[in-house]
Image (cartoon, rainbow over all chains, first blue to last red; front, side, top):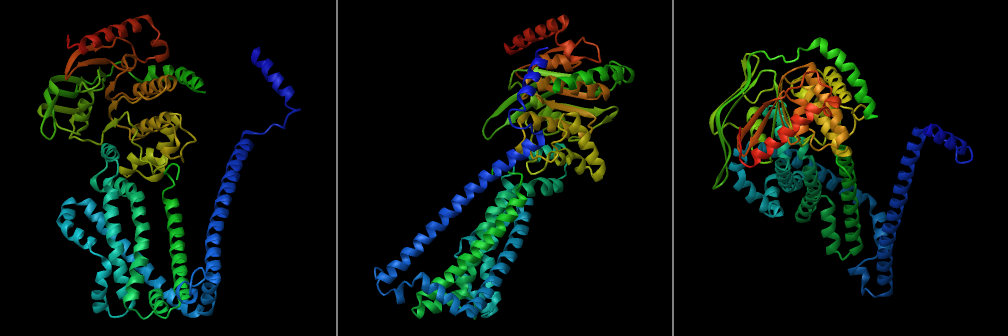
Length: 291
Length: 286
C-alpha cells in the first residue's frame, strides 16, 4: 500500500519536473559530464603552460634587445634569432636531426631489448645474476661517455660508434629495472599461481613478467634520456653528422642562436619520444588504478 | 537483489540435491592423515613451535572446519596439506579416494582470505587463469569462467580489473577462480571473513549447495563458529598448537542455512562450541 502511494506521487510529480531519463541515458550523462570536467581542467593546465613558456621567452627577447643581457648576439642569442636560425638552416639541421634521431632510436631499441632479455635471464636464474653481479655493477657505474673513444677506435667515425655509446647507457638501466621489476612482484601472487598449478616457467611468463611491467617502464623512460644523451655526447666528441656536432660548431663560432636551435630540436625530439612511450604505457597499464 | 537469489536457489536446491547426493557419502578411504606432526617456524636465530604432536584424520569426502584463536596454527595445517611446507617431524598423507597425492597437487584447490587476484587481468581472465595453466582450450575455459562468475553473482563484471572492484566482489571472484578448476579437494582459509553479513550468508549458502552437489574432502579454517557449524560435518577446535576438541556436527544434509542458523538445536550446538573454544584458549582440551 505505502509503496503504491509513493509511486503514485512520484509519477504525478514527474511531468512537471524534467522528463524521465532511462538508466542508460543517465549513465551516459554522468560520463560525459565527468569527461567535460576533465577536458576543462586540462584546457586550463595547457593554457597556463603556454603562458609560462611565453613569459620566459618574452623576457629573454626583451632583455637581449634592451641590453640587460650584454652582447646578446654572441653570448645569449634571442628567441626571434633562434627562430630565424631554424628557418635559414633548415635543410642542414634536418639532416643532422635525422642522423641523431636514427642513432637514438637504434640505441634505445638495441639497448632495451638486450636489457630486457638479459634482465629476464638474471631474474629467472639467480645464480647467473650473482655470477655477473660484480662485472655488471662495475660497468654500470662507469661514466659511459668515457667509452666513446674506444667505440670510435673500434667502429670508426660512424653511426655505429654513436649507437654503441647509447646502447651502453640504455642497456644497464633497462637490465636493472627488469630485475628489480621482477623482484618486486607480490610473493603471494606467485604462491597463488603455484597453488593453481603453475609450473616455474608459467609463473615466470604469466606472473613475474607482467608484474614487472610498471617498473620496467620507469626504466624505459630513463633509458630514452640516456639514449639521446649518449648519442649527442658521442657526436660532440667525434662524428660526421648529428645535432651534437652542431652544438660544438655553433658554440665555437659564437652563434648562441644556433646552439639554442639545436637544443630546441633535441627537446622536441625527447618530448615526442616521451609521448609515444606514455601512450604505450597507458595501453599496457590500463589495469592500474588512478593513473 | 541478493535476497531473491537466495530464495530462488533454496527452492531449487532442496529439490535437486535430495535426489543426487547421499547425506554422508564417505568412501571409507582417508583424505588427510596427520601422524604425530610437529612443526617449527625457523627464523634467523630462533624458532617457534607452531604445532606440537598433532594427529588426526579426515575421511575422504568429509567437510572439516578448524576453529581456534589467531596464531594457533590453523593456517599452518592448511599450508602443509597444500604442500607449501613439510612438517618438521611426523608424517602427513593426503589422498583422494585410494590415490595418495604428491604435494603440491593440481587436484587440491586452496583459497585464501586474501584474494591475490592478478591485478593486470580482468575478472574473466583471472577466473580462467587456473584453466589456462592446465591448457584448457580457450572457448571451454571462457564458458567455465562465465559459469562460475555468474554463480558467484559477478555476471556483467567480466571486463573489470580487480582494482575497480570492492573487496567483497574480489573475494567472490577468488571463489569463482577456485571453483573454476573444479578441485577434488578443497582447502579454505577464512574465505568469507572479509565480507558483509548479507553477502556472507548468500555465499555460504551458495558454497554449501555447490559442495553438497559435488562432495569432496574439505578443510575449512574459520574464526566464525556459526559458519563452521553451518557448513561442516565436523569441527576441530584448536588450542595453541594442539587439537583441543573434535566434534561431529549433528545436522542433516542438505542444509538450508537460513533455516538452520535460527534453529534452537543449532543455537545450543554453537553455544557449546563457543564454550569449548574459550576453554581451548585457556589451554584446556577434551
